[in-house]
Length: 326
Ligand code: SF4
Image 1 (cartoon, protein in one colour):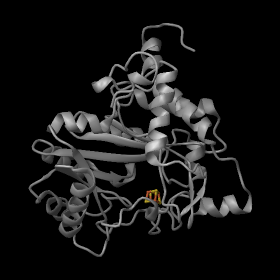
Image 2: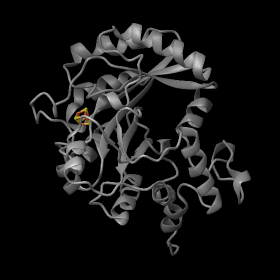
Image 3: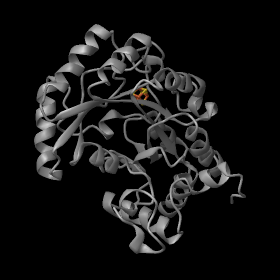
């Protein structure tokens, strides 16, 4: 993608992009279009099965991001096949990363996990796996297995974080703190595994500075890629109940664009950005109701970066050099 035509010179990343896009990285790495195929391998999570709690994180409704091809009743190879068929048709993707997405996908003994991951890797066009999980659902044995797999295949571990602020993690009932996330990332670092994280911007009790501080904090943790999205309220969650009982402000569209741009400016330019916003299905979304499509949000974000003649890491690099930063 080249945003240079929308004002100012092009950005410093591949294709003139103003941020380090994960999709571009995968395309360059594999020499073709690569898509992620989400599968539901039937896990739960300690925040739901009673180990830590029963209600889950207050914002969590896994149906909000599960594609229709990821039906947990189907065996993993069938889900992979259905997902690949769809992604080939829709996006002309040629290679695929199987994404173990809903719930905590390392939350089982290794003997149960390995056959599921190996089943996903059987398809000839699958180049690797991405596994979404929590910092308290990994151990040395699991990481060592991923490390060995990563010698031949693409392997990504995505550790949910959502906020670096422990007060927020308590309020949203994550069941772990920032320190335990950093420890899990530390165990995983330097072992050939791509490490990812998710962050949410827009918790109503977090100030803008607290949101932007997350970019500063994760920039130094050795992350390879990051997903960021705005707080949205979806049906069937504790947050939806709280919002109904006592409505609180959600980020307006223009406000989010500004925050996302400022977040990117502070983010280490080596961290690849997989997502900058989230879209829940219309039937589940309570708010914010921006009325924009994915393409429109993407276009507006890129337009805002270009209009400000800025890019991912601009402030991060300036601060490293000891220059004054805004
Ligand atoms: S967000 Fe993840 S950790 Fe939290 S309840 Fe949902 S599946 Fe569990």
